[in-house]
Length: 89
Image (cartoon, rainbow, N blue to C red; front, side, top):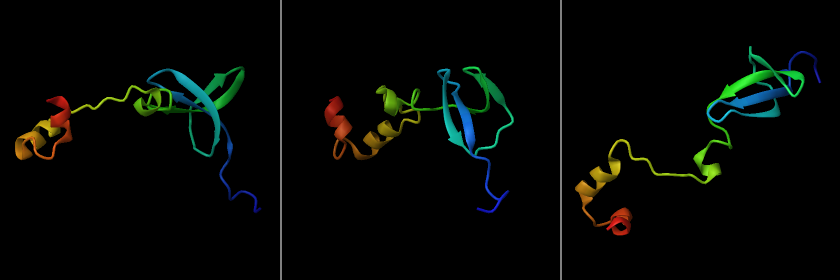
């Protein structure tokens, strides 16, 4: 391998800010922040979603309809073709 053409592949702490979950993995991602984790200093990457907080992995998946898209669909097409209308009604 040629020297100095590959990024630095090292251990990094990823910190899920939504649930205060930290895990160590190896990465080439660049970061300015550092953290002392389990007595050793690591580069720190702050993230908003990880497997600890994502609804798919936690089993708390909900359908959130903030834009009213389901209701607009029902008004446009009625109960024909809507599986949710059958389940709700």
